[in-house]
Length: 279
Image (cartoon, rainbow, N blue to C red; front, side):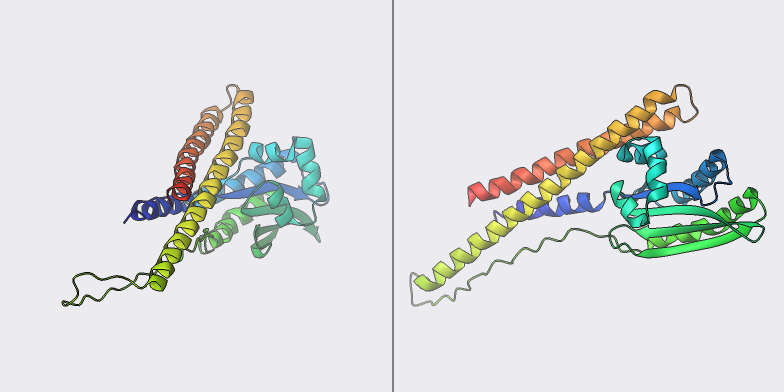
């Protein structure tokens, strides 16, 4: 009966950990021929990012801002350089700590502009999907994005969400058969030793599982703390920009997630230590 509250705590920790957002990075659109202005490329990237935000449920996915990506790569200049030089989009996603990464690339075929947008799972490195299109002008490429990007990002909705799994060995219970003629029943010594070993072995794995889970959740809090710092730096430089209020909301959201994970992680980790000491 002593283990019941600990199993409840473990279940709550697993549920909270499983609800963490998966990060989606929309990397700056590239132009292989350098024929499109930076302003137009940025607008195409923003339209891809806007589509992802509209399609993906916010309780599961968090679409990274350009400022968040820059914060991981050091500077805007370094971000542009890394994006151009990177030969593996999934590896670029790992550098910015994303779970999914997508990027558009502009080229030419005959007299037309072309666009290709790819979506990768960072963990597996597998291509989840892509789409292509062509047009005489940049406005036509924008129409291609509006037509096809939503279906591409929806592929993430059917991707199974990875959750940490902790296997806890079930304790062995010794069945006692009562005989009416015997006033007292004593378990055989060997049987009693086996039951005690099984109980303490189970307690050890429960405690270890709680320790690992608490550490993982606290790490999530540290990650959100770094995100809050990056969002705050972006907020400070906006001034009266139209995205000023949204930037502050991003800061508050990251801080809220950080505090929640710190609290839950601390409780779970303390529970694991308590099991070690108690048993």
